[in-house]
Image (cartoon, rainbow, N blue to C red; front, top):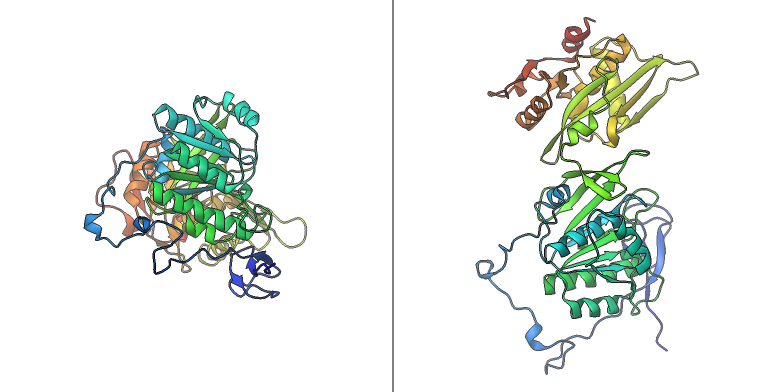
Length: 459
């Protein structure tokens, strides 16, 4: 019997090496290389025409202007937030990977999508590798959408899945999950690096050849990344990731990769007994419990992709009672918080050396852009002075190391969202004030953080 060829694959990045090493040469992680069988090589085309596929199936080069079907309409699911994150709907022949923590709602939303597509006369095939037909039926019974007409296949063997998909010719194929699917051509358990890569690659070829849109549910590692090789995210066209703050009902669906739409777009949902319900006004959700009379609070108009959102930033600065002062942040990078504290101490005269500092971005969102710097600074100053910031004001801008307030992009859209939510003032850099300010809001220019703190708190 011929010896099975193996190679070593990194669990973190999917890099392949011929022998085991303590450290992955690609991502520099330690003890992540595992030995897996390699995929067998497929038969090559012979000169006489005896090939594994018919000669007519061989691809031929074509000029782009001669390509037909590129203008095909997207398929709308009817879930407004889901369609928005995808860029306007499902693209025929696309492959979408949906990841997230266990129990966050990945299977629920895909079953809702399948039910809505069936109602729109778009045939779907839902493949469940983790649940039996009875379990999926119990979940569908509690959904607001009727999923009774969805075709269900409880199967994990890839060839059987592709055979049934070829017979039924669905417009949308949903695989829950890619880590449970396996091919007998490879040795090893379902979910290992080789199985995930090979199964995803074959599903991707099926999608491109037939025009079927394929959705893959992906498990996550303990570090929060999607399990499997990094090539899994490169193979697919779109990567959607579910996020949630512990103990909250809202879910944020974020596009981290999208070949057919904007990256970093988000959709906001609320988990209910009848499934995931889209939130039409996310800013209202994130500001719903805000109290304007409390100190240590400020509102920032941030951008998530092309969508402006108003988010509350809360800060608490109190005298350190035990040893070295603490620096705890949720929703903002800890190093960014340290930088802002240093700027406030040096440029605005606020002493944090003996104070514990706690910072929280309300609603489970994460402030990745620097436009939230001024709001963080105002929230910290408000807590130090124990005076509330203006309840009808938003703060927009990046804070430089010299204490200057720098402009950020898409100010008009941020101001329009603030005006729509009833805010009356917006503090920002003088260079960021647009020529036309939306009605109902006043742009207040602020040169630096010292002048801003003095204007608001009189410090």
